[in-house]
Length: 398
Image 1 (tube, rainbow, N blue to C red):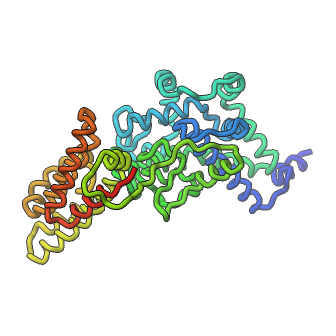
Image 2 (image 1 turned 60 degrees about the vertical axis):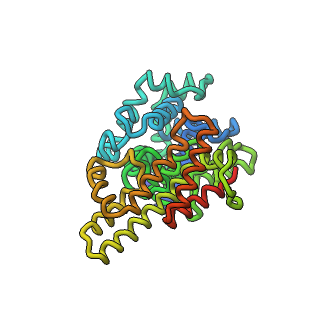
Image 3 (image 1 turned 90 degrees about the vertical axis):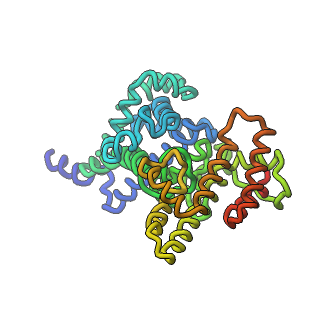
């Protein structure tokens, strides 16, 4: 009897080789990631796509087995994160809590907010509320996880405990920790959206495309998280596959800028296109500012001016939205502007351009006049980068 128990603990029912156990673990954890990014995140939290009931129920059942997360609670916490991003009310921002805490205790932060009835009531609307959700998934959250534990041990024996542990840690470490932590602290930014979100990697494979976090925060309701030609979103690949099988319907993706021959003067159609693609407009402006900082730093260095080093360092932050400048940055502005009229003009003109979509109290005609005047001043500035930007603005098409 004892020998039989020991043999079972050593081999399980499958007597699988080590590589088969690793392959199984990678497959089941990947399915969990896909369920989180496609179903919980893009479908439920942001309504970026609709899934066929069979697909939705599969993902709900799988998440109940492997995470114990409740759809309504997850969607509510995530929506609040977007609504209160980087503020004192953000459930899991490293700006508020610190990177170390979010990395190591991201799951605890999620659970604390999920237990907040006010958050769930306010932000959890539209989530499943059928019989199986009320009687099983939401009521017995640990039953599914317990079944997964038993199945893992039955299949692989004692090593099944390790397989189970990896499954339980996969989402807390990669999603709650890496994305909510590093995705707001380290990486690169395609767009200068108001929060601190970053793209952790350009290839979203391990975490289902969630690595492209800055893209997501810029276009939160987009079913596709990649925007650059070199970026890859594996979650979008699965969505496209489901769409081809008529099991998913994409509702929204990030708008792609369209261009036509530059108009002699900006009209209402151009104004509408510029506002719709404002993040692209400001991304181009940011690139111009970074180039200008580098050029001005080289010019000042050739003149042996001490401000050259200060201007060179400004390349890391001068292109950011002014709301993200620190007090230290603000203190350096006067010295930078005194050293370079070129940079002063670029920064001032950027503020004026941003006012086109920030002044919600103005009529369309007033906004149009503002944008027309901006283009005229940019073209008359004598600064090549501003002239190029004005030409690009006049080229946006609806």
